[in-house]
Image (cartoon, rainbow, N blue to C red; front, side, top):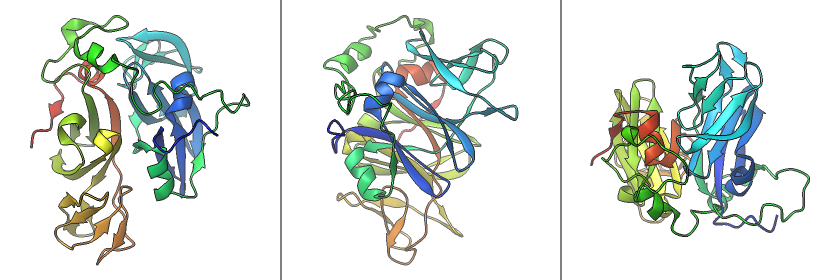
Length: 294
């Protein structure tokens, strides 16, 4: 695929003992992928207007749903529908807003976003979504392949939204166009402003769970993990060369949370559920959400 460059963004997912990459070039057109990985029905979603990539479990009330795109928007974000009930779903929130399932929420799953070259180096055996049986150049015009169209983020920061947004729901704690990572554990949620963090390992706690957020490439590469390793709670630093080091054991960890060298080599961190999006969509989806402050 000549259009897939090393710096083209992908959403990465691990399941059933395998890894999978979903290029933003393709998701920019189709926005939704219904997949089944390791026996788990999953939904890969992306909205270019919100720069929002989220992976969900497709099971609601014990039944797997199949999703489509209604080609309409809610709060300037993708609206999905499920084939089984016809309910409409707000993508970033993963919440049904119209129909029989109104108020239901999809469960987000652990995932990662990073440039294709980085994902491939970490997972050389990864499976790759190639799109439909179109021309091999069908997805070459990747306006959002590794970022935004020219001036788009500035426009959103100025609250000049392309489509209607309820301004009463906006939250001025961050600029509307700030790229944030929402990390979710059973005890709560926290947002991390990626523009403020840079290339870093953030050590935090959410709902009593020790959490590490790994970021690189100015926030293009993101992932979140539990800091628990056996009976230890680890504290991480970024060494400046794309490797993370825990202070307690001195083990070297890669961006997928795998211990590569040191006393814990061969072990792995538990990946946590994330949403990566522009701030305005998260603020509308989760009013009053906690924002990380160093």
